[in-house]
Length: 123
Length: 298
Image (cartoon, rainbow over all chains, first blue to last red; front, side):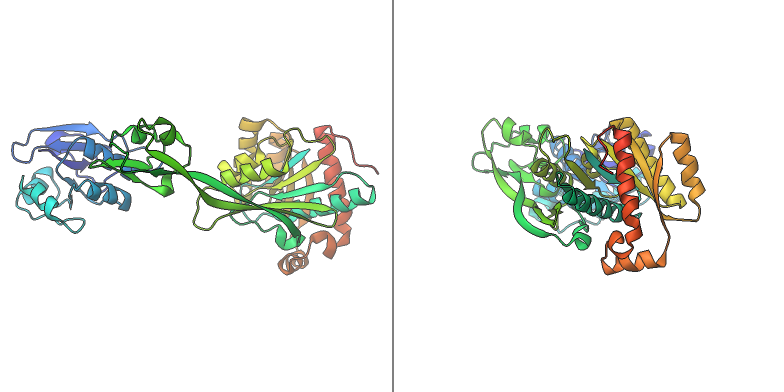
């Protein structure tokens, strides 16, 4: 299953990690094992309000199993946690580094993980 | 005639000008047995005209909005409501609809579009309207409920409550707007016949005067005039702008400690300094001339 990584530009695997969740310009949807990915524009980036909700809904619709971002706001947090999609704080400078940390279960979770969240990581 | 007092910048003296103009006219019209003056405080986030007018309120009215209530047992999680919500106030997670009240504009789209009729509406109080008088002056204000962030619906309801659809020619409504140039100010200017722009002769005063003048020019095309408050030093920057934009300067109130002290006591300028009485009568006369309305009797 894909996870989503927030990006501040679109340069494939060399893209820059974004420190924000809902207002970043791009999301990488990537299978952490096979590294097969697509990069899509964030439809919520310029929302006048409720960007966190819209971006989190997008994650739900894309059926991601996790989100890696520099930060996650409270409303996005509410929606993601209702959907039991775990969110993790990105680590290091590159996609490669943060993915490695994700696979090694070294990423810090943004909220108290529950059982479902853990099972999501193990998939 | 509807006169909206706006400024762009806060603290330039909108309320000072609006209250004194309204009070002066009300007294004058009473003595001449003419139709009353209404002062409507449209700064519903921080209404303060009542502090100077000391009105007796006689009637109150609640402002409510219709909030969606989702019946989870009827909801199939289809997501239609999420798609139609312009404000991203709804989300669907694991078949459950999440509602974010703070983002809801109570537009009703989700209620209308839900294929299962699973969304009902429930009223929520978002503000209060009050009307009353002080002597010959009729007064009304709106108060946004604490914790709410949308003043515009309160202003819309306040105006609808007080001003008839086709106001009588001789009725005068003076609207004290909020600072800025955003939705509440636009709502306060809607249907106005004249915009009275109160500014101060500072770069900030000029900067925001430009913004509000631009708003009026682009959106309303109604005549306007400037009052320079705290006048006396730096008036040239306002004068230059006024002449470029062909907006007349109708009145000046000097920067004075005495005036500031009277204001701080909650006194009306015309009560503390009766020499301003004629200046406010004159201000209204100039506005009437510009709008082509009938002039007050001499």
